Length: 336
Image 1: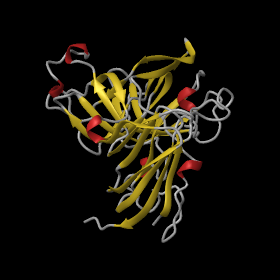
Image 2: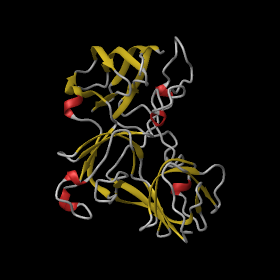
Image 3: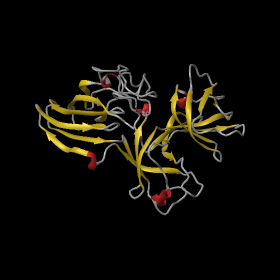
Image 4: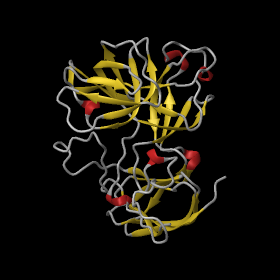
């Protein structure tokens, strides 16, 4: 278990990245004002204090939240969905199911279905190395393969002759690639039309993609007492957006289009709609333990007695370059 400084972050200064960041355009990585800086590992409870220091030269405004999601997806109004629905109850999402806004469209399909959960192997078009993904859903009518966990740069590669081959025999040639993000459904509020997602691209002190793998979820890879959090050295995140980037012959460098998230459960009508978003936020006021809190220059604030259960995130946001240090310890818990 980890003890001591579990996470560190400086708003708009600490670098992060993700697998599709262009290193030529962004040689030093990306920065943002907010981040889920720490996630309590599975089968673990974490206790600690958050120290916030401001030496920026002016007052910093700070938000802090404890929440079990990284993204709150706001669905577009029912009348803007396609097809139009009467209310958000027409959509069905359940906790822990895979959700994604990433898909490819294939041509020259051989007629064999792609199967959810199977690995797709991507080849041709000058691709090198390992190029794979995992099928989340198959839309046979529109020849769309919805996927998660891509390995390699194939989703952003525009070239002729790229083949998408499923382990079960499905095969086709990629014509369009919509690059969004993917994760695990935490909850769906059908009254507010809000889908809460733990983004699988997030790496802080844990790999969010390894939700069910207790033995390899920690970034440090070190078990036992004294395990250190090295989140500040290797932050990755591809936050969910209200758009995805479309790549095809007409859009070699990619263009933004409206994001759609695939419903993979039957809502009773036999339909599996693609849900349109109106916006995305990364926290919610009801989860905040500090909201728009002013910290004067050359001042420090400590939030003590914080307790996180497994897979809760410590989310921070600051309007100026405030520094956050989460200091505490982790204890193993038993899950039946």
